[in-house]
Length: 251
Image (cartoon, rainbow, N blue to C red; front, side, top):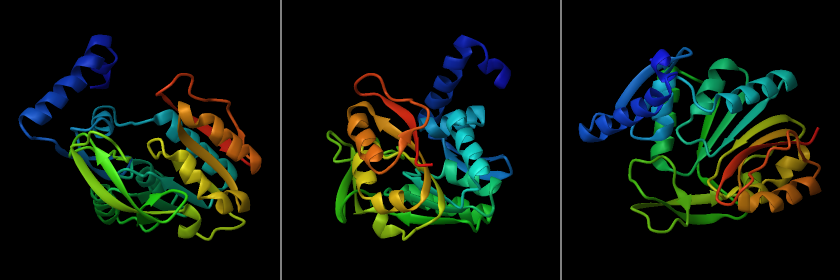
């Protein structure tokens, strides 16, 4: 399969065929073993389909976190917007002493993470079913497809909605004087999420990998600069309605 995916037109064609097959025949559930981990996939969705075909997903970003955890002897990994746990599961296998906190507001994602934890007998992942922001309460999530694992807060023109708790990260965890790595992917809600995490950010040595929307970048950079963080690699989104993985640290 990897050989054929190196051919440009097949690289585009094969995922499209697999997607159409999954929808047409309602045959979309797959269990695969990779890196000594059992994964339950739904190949209707891009993340799952990419991982199913290539046995990799966001490998550069993932390897970056692996390198940071190794270099800094990190104690905690906070997976903020864990989706179904692809980062958490892979890191749990690589670092059995790493304390992993997987956080997601979508019930079916939480069910998948918990199923995978049980199936793989991981003991170093703790799961939290909540959105994260700058206040406590409830929020409405929405998606344009009932099979998608990615919902947005206050999304318009949705096919499916789901209510979730929302809490500041500072209310979830009382962490001080630790080495922390965070992966943050909250679908445009990153400023609010970081605003509710300032005690954790101030009181720990932290490395942040944040998917930032173009429209949010300037205020996020200002907020983080004010508490001692800088953009480690200088990466940022360059045009409206796009995202980029940005890396901040305070050490």
